[in-house]
Image (cartoon, rainbow, N blue to C red; front, side, top):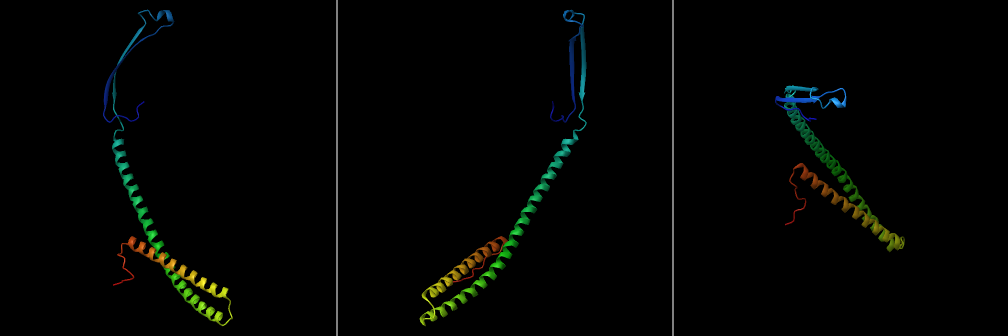
Length: 168
């Protein structure tokens, strides 16, 4: 069976020889022969289909490529917007943690004075120191994450990063 029709007309000739008989013993007799000869012309009626389908496949491929590009661009925009919102949240977090560090420093000062006056125990004083260290650690981690996210956003948005600290 043919998978695809030919593009051009085709002309061919066929001939057949056959023997027919009512029983097996008469098949070898020479009088029961049949001959046929024919000329076959095949004219493809739908040869334009492969020309059109090639064009349509090209259009479909270009549409698919455009859709993939649009999808990638939308993902890029979504990533930029996510990072922008993340930066805003991290700015608020860093500010709140800076306030918490200042509060923990004051608490440590009061706890140290209370300890010196005998009003607080060594455990309370050490706990205050530990709380201050935890607050500073969280604050520094948030600042690092903020700097990393801001640098990534700036690079993705096509901005040249401006150094925040300039040392001479």
